[in-house]
Length: 423
Image (cartoon, rainbow, N blue to C red; front, top):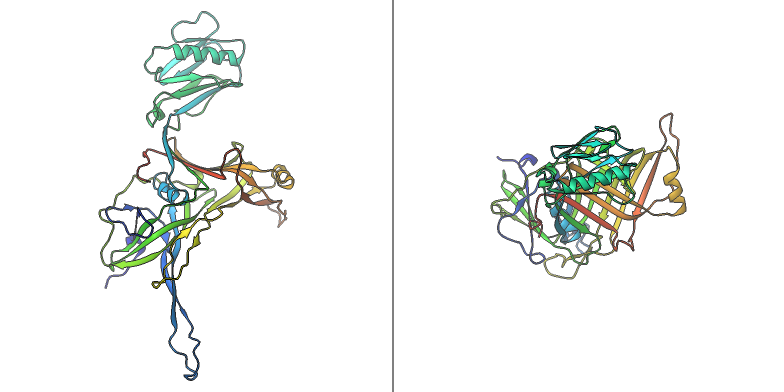
């Protein structure tokens, strides 16, 4: 007799064209850690009297189909879940960028290497691949910008060079949007120069999701147990919330809460020939939490949850199913825990001053997740000393609509997909 095991289970997903209507064709096979998505129908105790002390048979109650799906954080597959939570993304190619910062004036014979071509700083009469040293770091960078943009070297001409106002930074932007620029190399032999990285970064397709949309897509999701065999098809699945936990070690995962309309069991898969994407999961050590673009000091852990606060449309119907699940006022909540080393965050909390928070995971220069909370309010925490160890402060924050941004939350994923998979 065959038995069901999680090692053989599968989870297939495809977007519906109309709420609750099961879709056909080839589904996407989704990686997942666990799932308790399923329907249940409770019993109502019978209240009829007159038949003695033993109760009559109970009545069946309405059907509820919901549950949590825990998925690995993957910059490609996560886009399906984010589309369900926020609606269709805005997708577009972005160019790879990088920089070299100069803290002071470079010295004679210092070098920078741009995509394999070496440029040398000289104090007078520059020729060929030489850059004139200026009277300040800014003037030296300006001279480098002019020299690089005027170069006829094929390794160099594929990018554009500039100096952002008020900085002594040599900014390099690859001319072609997409992933190609991530292979463009940077190097230096200069005590006053600092590289962003050894290559340009961020080239690919960026998919931007924003909070606050009025309508959300629905999905058909099949949870399969092929050894039995039993395939549970859930239709009218709408994503309610997503939660991330950030910590020092372990595998990064997200918990999706979903509400479905109905479940039907089949003895054969209904997902056709499953489609797959390249799977690249992220570890917790590749995560970061920032405020104002700067990593939060002494941070030990953090979490963030976005909730659509779906309301079940519980109309009276003879099959016990809901008519839909509509988004209401969204909520952004979470926690950041820090070792108590200064009063910066406590002062902001006490004053009611909002901050911005950025939660991110970076796998490679072309695979990244960013969660941007534009306006977050921190409560004033109570500090407690518990033994001789370090004192920690925990801030349970709440997000709010930011007038300047016109939204509460932006989520961006960078990958090599054009976005049609999500639509």
